[in-house]
Image 1 (cartoon, each protein chain N blue to C red):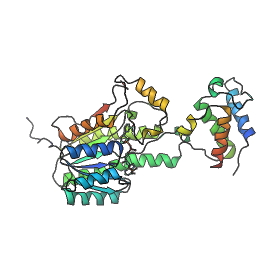
Image 2: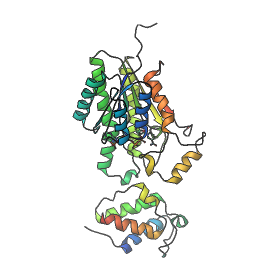
Image 3: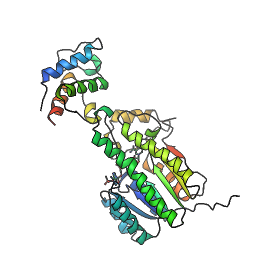
Length: 83
Length: 248
Ligand SMILES: NC(=O)c1ccc[n+]([C@@H]2O[C@H](COP(=O)([O-])OP(=O)(O)OC[C@H]3O[C@@H](n4cnc5c(N)ncnc54)[C@H](OP(=O)(O)O)[C@@H]3O)[C@@H](O)[C@H]2O)c1
C-alpha cells in the first residue's frame, strides 16, 4: 500500500492551515485549539491523505476526540494508514 | 359515533432488541403490567434469560438478528404458538453511530440503514400482515430518536433512519385506517451501550441544555411506550418526544 510518511502528512497539514491564512508550528506538542485546527480541518487533511494514497480512511469520532496536539494528528493518521 | 371499533390494549407484544438498555426496560415493564412478551436480540443476555425463567408462561425469548427476515418470521410464529396472537409491536432494536459522514464506510452506512430502517419496516410488515390476516386490531410503537428532528454531528446515517421511521409512522397510521394505532416515541439521549461512545463533554453539554437538568432515563420513556400500547387514547400517527425539553 502507498503509505505517506509523517513528514508528508505534516506538509499536507500545513497546506490545510495555509489555505486559511494560518501557519503550522514546528512543535509537535502545539495545541490544536491554539492553532485553530478543528475537526473539519482534520477531515480535510484525512481526505487529502486519501487522495494521495488512493485508500479510503474511515474512523469513528471517539478516537478523534482524544486528539489534542499536532503530534496526535500525525500519530492518528500514521496508524490509520496501516489499518 | 363512528362504527370503527376501538383498538384494544395490546396483550401479546413483540419487542425487538429486548436484551438490554431501553428494550430490556420495556420488556420488564410490560411483564409487570401483566402483558405477554416476545423479545429478541442477536444475543440473549442473562437479564433477559432471567425474565424468561421467571415468567415461563408469559415470555418467549430468542437470539434473532432483526435483519434476518426468515429468522424473525420463525421467531414470530414460535412466539404466537406459545403466547397467542401478537397484537402489539415495539420496534426498538437499532445500532448507533458516532462518526462523521465523510469518514463512515459505505458498508457501515448500509448496515445502519438495514438495521434501523429496512429491518423494522420488514418486521412491521410481517406483524401487520399477521394481525390483519387474523382480523385483529393492534398497536405499533416505533422507538425513534430526537436525532430525527434535530441535528447532531456524527449521527448522519442514524438520524436519516430515525427520520425515516418517524415518517413511516405517520403514513402507516393513515394506511391502517384506525385498525391499528401506530406511534413513535423519540427519546433524547440516555446512558446505554449505544450512547457510551459519546464523550463526557457532549453528554455534559446535553444536560446543560436540558431544562429538567438530567439525561432522559429509560424508566422515563417506558411509561410512554406502555401508554401507547395499553391505554385508551386517540393518539395515532404521532411522534412523542421524551427529552426534558432539551430540544425545545
Ligand atoms: N441511547 C440513547 O441515547 C438513545 C436515544 C434516543 C433513541 N434511542 C433508541 O432507543 C432504542 C434502544 O437503544 P438503547 O440505547 O437501549 O441501545 P442498546 O443498549 O445498544 O440496545 C440495543 C438493543 O437492540 C439490539 N440489537 C441491535 N442490533 C440488532 C440486530 N441486528 N438484531 C436484533 N437486535 C439488535 C441489541 O442487542 P444485540 O446487540 O445483542 O443484538 C439490544 O438489545 C434504539 O432504537 C435507539 O435508537 C437511544
